[in-house]
Image (cartoon, rainbow, N blue to C red; front, top):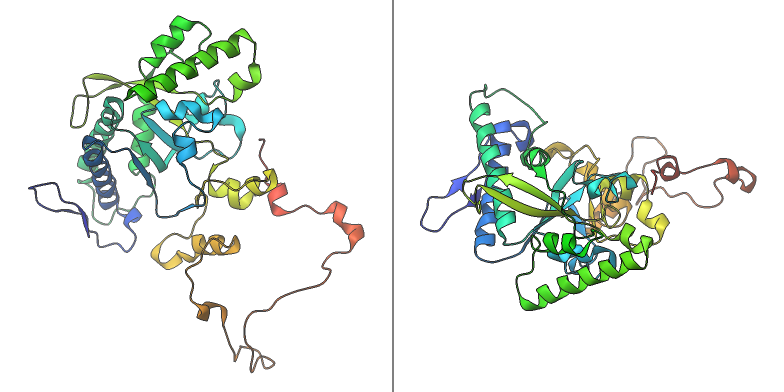
Length: 348
């Protein structure tokens, strides 16, 4: 189908002979490239862009996490780019591990603001994909690969970029002020909010409020070398941070660990990652996981009205599904059992 039609330009399409685009490195990378070009068109028009993959289910409004209303996420309101992570535990949480920026970031949930930093990132991202497309264009049409996509090169660009030492959580006021100059504050209200946040961080240092400083999600500054389409200049700084892995959940934390359920809250969004079965023949893999959590609400009534005859002589006529009720495990045995989620729990 049509992916992008720039004003006054020809339609840009992606096609493949494969049923599953991921199996075609040329087609899938071209889809990624067109997607980022689409991002840039919106950003140049002045829009903030929140994009998610088709296998993401939104359960709550993300705005409080994006606009700084949530205290621990106040810095997110002043980042150029916010992206989800594939973390399965709290090993990416904190200033030490840079809130997951140095690990695998997942572009299945990403927010881009119309800033020079975000445009520079998109420019470097597109340039790297164009280089890879040139390489794979020389491969046989029968070549199949699964290991590179637009997310691969998003991570590559940022992991290779120089990380600046500046931090808006620095102890010294002059260091916080220097970091704040590289953060997003497009109007007077936003600038005032950022100034108030820096003051609050300073008071937390004075009061030795370690709990507040430890849980306040930070912004990481990356210096990008890019002078291509979408870049602000040859050297541009992007203020980058991540969504909290508990509230912007991966398939592992939500389905396997049941982490959010055990912690007593509903996440903002669920991405059905860590799940095979997403080819055209096997989309039931992700759908069924959503069904099990009552998040797939598009089945017709007929899906729940299966009827016989079955394959066994005693199944000449039946309707519906088999259900089991009553006590399944004797009470005395409960203390030696653990659920699948308990067996898979990561540190939190």
